Amino acid sequence: MTTSPEELLPTTRRALLHRIATAQAEGRSPSLVAAVVRDGRLVWSDGRTCVDGHGPDEDVQYRIGSITKTFTAVLVLRLRDEGVLDLGDPLEKHLPGTGAGQVTIAELLSHTGGLAAETPGPWWERSSSSLRPELADVLGEEPFRHPVGKQHHYSNPGYTLLGSLVEALRGAPWEDVLRREILEPLGLHRTSGQPQAPHAGGWAVHPWADVMMPEPTEDLGLMAPAGQLWSTAADLGRFAVFLMKGDDRVLSAQSVREMRTPAAPTLAGDWDSSYGLGLQLARRNGQVLAGHGGSLPGFVAGLWLSEEDGLAAVTLANCTSGVAASTVSTDLLRIVAEAEPCIPAPWRPLPEVDAAVLELAGSWYRGTQSTVLRLTADGGVSLGPLTSGVRDSRFRPNGDGTWTGLDGYYAGEILRVERRPDGSVSHLDLGSFVFTREPYEKGAPVPGGVDPEGWRGLPRS
Image (tube, rainbow, N blue to C red; front, side):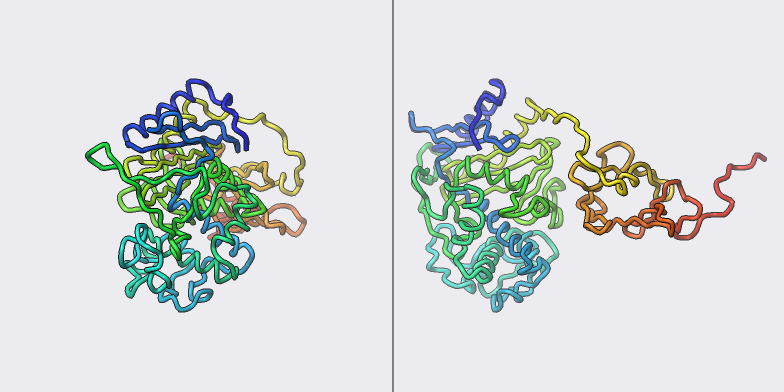
């Protein structure tokens, strides 16, 4: 991924610089660096600092806090894709004796396991990990705050359990597995568990005076999978590209799409926010976004992406509070999307088409509701209203003549083609619904049957 500053217009670049300069000045952060990725490439980065002539660039490390959780979630999804575990498995099946074994792996990933937000004892981010040498010290005597699976409640200990799960099933320390399975394949050479020069120092800025003091940098020990990592704007930009497109060396496009799919109840009081599997989800300024924020004493971070716009933005700052890093990142996405909207790729015909699938294209009816089946460029199909792209559900082929729904109302449902004895298409079957070529087509197996007299008008009196 190379830097190509010329790819953004000068006016866009100035608007981006103005946004981060305002964030650094008003947030009173010793330094701040940000980057924008478009179509898989770093197209802009810049930084601000209170030290003359020493501004950070996209290669300077900052601590990224809870963005670490997304990396941990990828490791767990890899285990699922390999068949080592199922997301519906209770933790006890693979990591016995924790005292929280009834929680499923999916519930841990989506923060719906009912576990406490933090550990018992001293503020874990600012105290020695030697105070929490065992999982029992992380969870405490009463690990639950809510009924299991009933609501979203963000839990740092929950991701400690996931990190320990990875270690148990891989037989190696979490950070070693992370480096081998994610960092090295994706080329994230400036992401690490411990800081590597050049890196920023963490600072606390007095809330009512322009003075500051250094924050301690603790190794998080067992809590590392919830927030340990250091990274750079460039590395997180590469990671964001992976979260949009997948990489078969790490996780498929289908699995990262699953990470970006809501898996938790909508957050109370905010109908535009949810949580997937290791990713926060939001709707902002008309954009559907996925990403994660992060903070540890001395640092704040935000990584957010818009798959539809092909954009991602990263913001890193070395202050305990003051800069809303996620808000800055989503503002950067908005600035680019509004100033330089995506130019569609030229239309091209499909390179090949299966005649049996092409036969299915066109209008279908569920009762009297008109629907259109379209062939998609990725070899699947979509089913939705006549107006293209509106509330469509996409389907991937299963290789046996059926398709599985990927999103929308029919996510996970099976689409089947039912044929007559002579081989001609009779109807489509989808989740018990019968789709026919004509509304209530005669001879089709419509539940309840079709009135033999057919359609009629209202007789005049």
